[in-house]
Length: 500
Image 1 (spheres, one colour):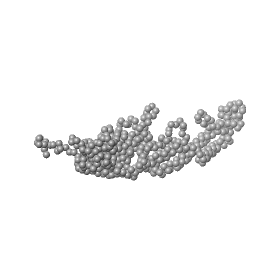
Image 2 (cartoon, one colour):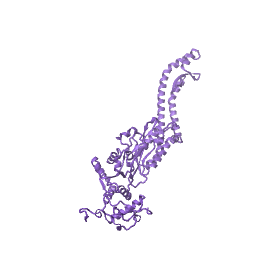
Image 3 (cartoon, helix red, strand yellow):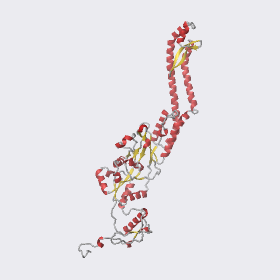
Image 4 (cartoon, one colour):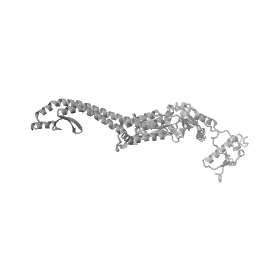
């Protein structure tokens, strides 16, 4: 009905709606059960549940709607209610790569077992550092090694005896002389049962103490004996080398058996190819470099060389993780490698400095991001899309040039399965669709939030339950159903005083 004083104009009652408080069966919102679920939004709820439960590739979710419509709350509620599980979760560790130190080796272990694995490897490192040499010097290994040394010495003596006997029959003897650091063997004539240098024999002949024929016999026989001595020396040296090699091989075999027995339970508990490879390399390093007791002045810490850096351990082995990253910077998403500062301020990085990010923590689970926060971080969007496209997490991407001056290692990439849920608005959705050709393929699920609600008796009471929820969880006062003045379009009134 138009205003009679102003034809064509509407009255205040015609353009103003006020909720009738009679439709409410409560006096204050304190008497109303708080809304647990987001009001309405059935279409968005169905889409979110589909994206969360579907395991097909590319079913990442874009939750599209205006701020304040409960987007984040609904996502959190759906993920909490569904409580999805998986049997594919794993722990991830990095260890030293002995063949390629700049590319740390990735170990994938059963979920929740990484700490026990690290403890066991620590026991091996402690044994190699202080117990291996002692174990090799204990009985019966020591007796067996001494017997080998005695057998080698007997063979050396057997090689030298024919020459020594022939020299003795000719009045000569072998004499060992130390010439600086070098030991030399020479043939001396024997006078009165004692070997004397050839020059001294000549002097004794001149003095008449020794007949000239002894000197002549010595000088005549010396070339043949010198040749025999050279040949004998070569055979003795060869036998000593062979004996030393045999003792070395025996020692390595004994050490390998000790270390193999020590690591047998680790191989049995972790039947993973990469674990076996690392243990093989660790044993090979110990055999080659650690058989002797470690020098106290040597700053090498075997606990670090043989250590384990856990970048992700899954204590809840079945439940799919939910990660809500509020600051999705490049480092927070991917992780990083923190360098250590060596002598002279030089940056040194190895497997110990590798740290995982949100993408790794969300492996086999869900990563929830505000799209605008993501786009505000340099490089973050590109890194996220690359990871989703390839399914490979590069903790230090080679193309991130500003990080390279301090990073000297390239960790082995990690295969990840992450369902990303982006929270954004309509404008950003279309901008991404136009700018990134991979966006539509990787985010196939669109959960649209309505900004309007059908006005009726049920929706009014539902809205009262929302107000009850906000009053309870935000620390606000309760509201009453008392009507407001005509200038207000609200049916619920803040009730100051006792109900708060």
